[in-house]
Image (cartoon, rainbow, N blue to C red; front, side):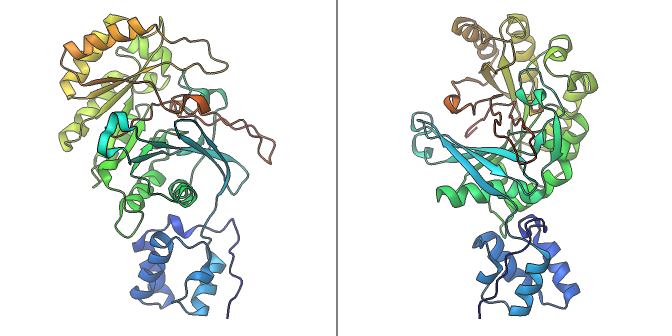
Length: 376
Ligand code: SF4
C-alpha cells in the first residue's frame, strides 16, 4: 500500500541530521539502531525524496517520520550555464528567499587527468553582514544563517540535477561561513562522514574574511579541512579600507589565529588577494604579503578585481598584476594568478548577485567575495 507521505516543507529536514542524532531519536522511540541506520542510508546514500520510497521500513515508522521531518527544504529555481560549463544554481528556500551555488568543472588545461573533478562553491548565509568593499553582498546586508540542511542540500540538489558527483566543496559562496559556525561545523561533519555525503575533508575548504576566534575553534575540529583567508591587504591601513572586519580583528589577531591553525594542522593555508587598482596593488603591499605568506608557507591566489555593478573600483593592468606576482614568486611564495571561470554568468569572485525577486518582494544579494579555488 502506498500512502502519501510528503512532509510539510517547513518540517526540519532529515538531511541536516547526523547518524548519532538519529540513533538517539530512534532509541527514544523504541526503534533499533539497525532501523536508524537504514534511514541514514535512504537519506544520504540513496537520496530518496519521499518517505514512501523507504520500502524496508514499516508503514507506521514511515508515517511517523513523515509527520515530523521533510527530505528537502529547497527547490532548484533556475540553472544558468556558461560556455565553459560553469553553472550557477539558484535554490529557493522554504521561506521564499534564494541562495546561489556554483558548480565549476576543473579545466583539462590546468588539471590534466584530474580534469573530471567538480568543485561546488557553497553559500552559508542569505546575504552577509561583513560589508567587504569589493563584494556586492555588502550592498544588501545580512538576512539570516542557512540551516545545516540548506547547506547540505546545495550539494544534493546539484548532484541530482547534473547526475554527477561533486568532488570538492568550497565555502566561498554567499555569506561568512564562520559567522554561522555551529551549522557550518555540523554540515562539515555530514559532508565528510562515510554514512553521509562522503567527501574527503581535504577536499573541503572554508574561506573566511578573518574571524580570528572562530578560526581557532575551527582548528580544533577533528577534520583535515582546508582554510582560505580573504586577505586583500597586507597592512592594517590598506586592509581596513577593504575589509571592515579588520577593525575588529586586526592583522596581529588574525595572524595569531593562523599561527594556532598551523601549529595543529599540516595543510597549507591559502590567502585570497583581490588586486584592486590604486588600492592594494602597490609593490610595497606585495613585499609585506610575501613576507607574511612565506612565514606561514601559505599559498597566495591573486585575483584581478571583477567589476561589480554599483562599486567603483577597477582591475589593475596586466603588467601591474604580473609585477605584483613577481615579487611573491621571487620571495619563494607559491602564487597563482588566474582568469576566473564563470565570469560570463557573474559567478566569479564578488559577482554572484541575485537579481530575482522573492515572493516576499525582497531583492536578496548573494555574493561570494572570495575566489573560487579549484584543486589546490
Ligand atoms: S567577501 Fe565574504 S565576508 Fe565579505 S561581504 Fe562578501 S560574502 Fe561577506
